[in-house]
Length: 88
Image (cartoon, rainbow, N blue to C red):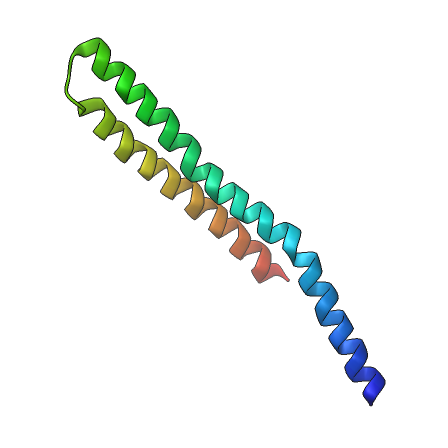
């Protein structure tokens, strides 16, 4: 009985340890999905504002476009993770 409990605890610890790389990958993906579009669209907006002499118009458009794109990419990733979890 004790051996079964120890085996079960060791198996749980091993499963948790195996999940860390996957969780780190998800965290890095989410950070990249948020940071890369934001930086790209904000800098593109600043460049367009300087070229067209608008006051922050394209920065604001870039911000909302980047947030929408980030939301879409994160939602897509969450859906993929959910599909994988449902198959297990």
